[in-house]
Image 1: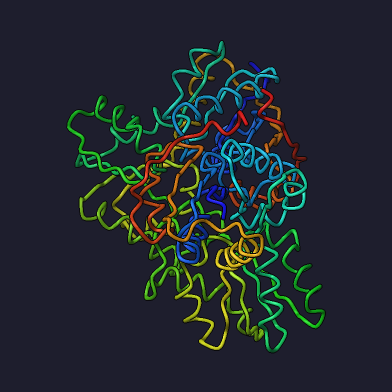
Image 2: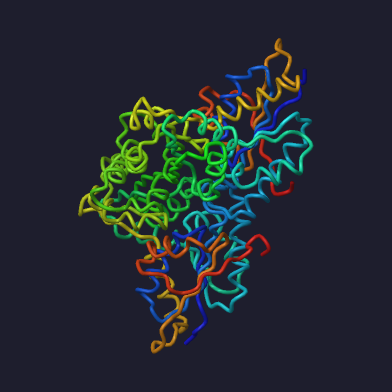
Amino acid sequence: MDNRPIGVFDSGMGGLTTVREMAKQMPNETVIYFGDTGRVPYGSRSHDTIVKYARQDVAFLRTFDLKAIVIACGTVSSAALSEISAEQDIPVFGVVGPTALRAAEVTRNNRIGLIATKATVGTGAYERVMRHANPMAEIYSLACPLFVPLVENGRTCPGDVVIETVVKDYLTPMKEAGVDTLVLGCTHYPLLTEVIQNFMGPEVTLLDSGAEVVRQVRSRLHASNQEADPDRKGYYRWYVSDSTENFSELASRFLGRPVTEPVSQVAIERY
Amino acid sequence: MDNRPIGVFDSGMGGLTTVREMAKQMPNETVIYFGDTGRVPYGSRSHDTIVKYARQDVAFLRTFDLKAIVIACGTVSSAALSEISAEQDIPVFGVVGPTALRAAEVTRNNRIGLIATKATVGTGAYERVMRHANPMAEIYSLACPLFVPLVENGRTCPGDVVIETVVKDYLTPMKEAGVDTLVLGCTHYPLLTEVIQNFMGPEVTLLDSGAEVVRQVRSRLHASNQEADPDRKGYYRWYVSDSTENFSELASRFLGRPVTEPVSQVAIERY
């Protein structure tokens, strides 16, 4: 048993979809969340900048006594997991590995689609793991840069001509390629599940990278007997690098519940 | 006569719409452009962060021997012009003043609309100048956060249901309020002129903040006899703070011409 918190970080607010999964799959765990809202988005930064930022994010989280760290950011998981992981003495989980393995496993026709930020697609990290796990897989990767701002502005509902048109414009080639498995490789995309599923059709399996990494964390904590006390309810602490002013409104959209806990600002460039 | 360059900076690429106006209105002038693509967008940052970033942007530009500086960024012009200007021994121009004055002057029914980033609207800087210049003016301000990503992803054409729907959703209250003058208070918005004009109707005057500040710069340089040699053609130098890789493609959209000049990367946090 280990009641120490799990640290989670993301370039901004999107990682809260992973925290939502943690609340669902492991409600006894305590979570310290850091969202780098002052430097979001990472997706368009260079590799060196992404690694530098990720190191600072982890340094801040390590000011708490943690049992594990989850990189909820597709960009950082793709670009910097091995560097970050090698520097830490607690397990560090990224979203890419578990999601890519699951995709390689569940596909029936070996045609897998990946949608993510430009940076995540550009690293080829998902493709490498999928190809390794399933050498027969044909992988179709696509950056969908408009999804993040559309989600952040609440344009996620079926029937909204704006999101439906953008989904159709981006995903028509995926559909035509006949993928039977589609990886949502960016933390924002789970909020588009319904619109994307409607467009792709019910026979296509959508994989949410947040849900997959949480599954992996849970299984590892179980294996090392490090789960939190099952009689206890986990609590949540929120930290961001820019003004805390608008955190709660946007955060509740990603978390799927009102945010009632306090939020603090962190001068992340000092870490 | 003064052939020294004019420094122009913006939080990213949008300020290139101002450079396009400079090329049109003052083709003899040389321009040093800095786009802070590594830290874009400023619009969601706190006041202190915006001032800090703007000081670094100016410090970099002052490594050149300049005759003037143009802040092509609505957010910085709103939040930090007076601070920056007070610290410099050459004239510093912002987009807010000249555009707000022009709006106060050209309105016939004293109903003026302002669309910009959330930060620019939030500072109230445009409103203050407009009210001062025209105490009768009723001002309708609105943040349009989806316009920037839509422009950056090329969704600017009349007939595109995505941009037309978003324009309609944002601007219907403006139209209903009966504004006869609409300030495009963000550097990206001039690329939406056609779609916005179509929606608002031909009787509404759209004011492009880039064009207005260039008019002011030209008139001041003329007054102080500091215009460049009329027989000379100005040249352009581009600097950005993130990777230069994708600069030319996006830049050409804002500049309205292919970008052939070299682009260099600047470690802006060292300034």
